[in-house]
Amino acid sequence: MSHEISNLLFNLLIVLITMMIHQIWLESRPNSPFVKKYTILATSAIAIFLCMTASFYENQGIFFDLRRIPLWLGTLYGGPITGLVLTFETIIITILQGRDGLYGSIVSTVLLFLTILYLKPIYFRLKLYNKLFLASGVNIIFSVMVLFIWTILHNKSFTFGTWFNFISINLIGIILLSFSVEVIRTNYNNRMKLFQSAKLDVISHLAAGVNHEIKNPLTSIRGMLQILKEDENLSKEKKELFYNIALDEVDKVDQVITDYLTFARPYPDSIEKIYINEVISKSFQIIKPYSTQMNVEIIRKVETSESSYVLGDPSKFVQVLVNILKNSIEASTLGGTIRINAAMNDKRCYISIMDDGVGMNEEVVRRLGEPYFTMDGNGTGLGMMVVFRIIESMKGDIQINSTPGNGTEIILTIPTNIE
Image (cartoon, rainbow, N blue to C red; front, side, top):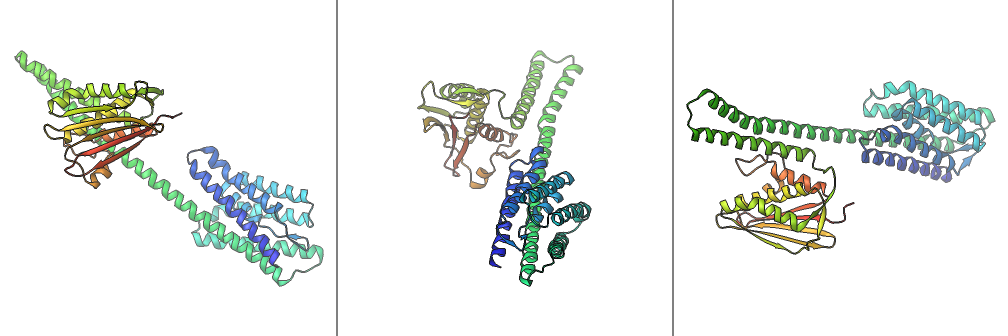
């Protein structure tokens, strides 16, 4: 009797592991049609094969295994074609093993397959506990059928212990597996719904941002053009002023669109070498007029060689540095200082940008990179979001150290061995 139990428990472990592999495989590739279609077939087929070939205990010609459980789950969740393949697999293995009661085994397998197809539409309309009740009932019926058919064909009877062990462990197996699969699938579907909801939330925020950040400059441009068209007596100075305002608004629209496109597509079309010294110098030249205007000094300390590089899009990386430097300048007081340090160590590039500005508390640091979160009333909140996306696309990491009143340090860590 202990051999019967140990063999059935071993089979139960096999089915549990294969179903776990199925779920891990499915969740690792949620958008793959191939995985969605064939994982349940592959894992159920493996489970049936292992259950039948690892059935090392036989009692009066009956092999104690749980082949019906993966056949049940595979047909339910994989569909008729998957169920048909699993049914043929079960029959072929039975024939190859040359077991007693071959015809009875084939008949019971085919009947189980047809029963599952019939019950499948009903099964998925039921609540969890009703599903378990239905699965248990079908499994008990077929467990009894197998033992009863064998008893009739061989004119022998099993002991009560054999009946109890065979039925009860099959019952425990189908309840445990059905419950586990349903709970896992429910949790997975809930996570996918949350994920989709989060994506829709981001899209709605982006749409609102487009409406706000682009509509306002366009309204200003339209107003300037309308004045220029209707008032023919405008002086040359006023015309020049209105033209400059319109051009500034066009530049704002262009920058907003650039930020949105970078957020939506941070990955470069082609990977290039980004020479550290070169991009830091270029970023410094771009931001220098602004820092001079704000009376903030930028000190560079670059300890990388001229040939030191990382991989990515140079223009996007310059955008990262410029965005961070711009934020640091705006956070600094008059006469403040910003320090840029760059070094290479252990196949990684480290770039530190540190200011002595107002600093940030933990809540603000945590929210950096969220769409539309900004400490500047005139900002779009997209600058740091773009920074995070670009560094993420380069397989890098961003560390932010900040304390209110003591400035902020942003450390970019980028691997140099990206393939």
